[in-house]
Length: 145
Image (cartoon, rainbow, N blue to C red):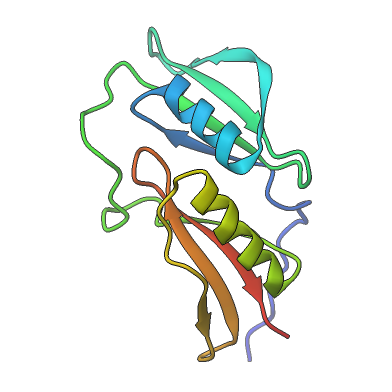
């Protein structure tokens, strides 16, 4: 019988860092669509990269931060979740009805989305899927009880 391993505690998700093709366009989109606030500081990269920097946004209700990164060596092309790395980002909502409010909001913002998708198995949840300007898949997620 193996013993359970207990990792040291964390306080939850603090931030995500995304490499994007256009930091300013991405920031404007996340501010407009997700209601994020821009932290009034640009953060330079410190890992042997001249010209790299990040703009940081914060989601006021949850405190989750997203860093949008510019890398001088960024190859052209959109995000593809089929490559090794990030698959998608999901933001939780408190109530199932919140997903309906979000779909109306996304429609108003001109953001294409999946509509509310109800899943029953292997566990019940509902989600709305959409993409940012770099094709990064985002979800709004409600876990059914």
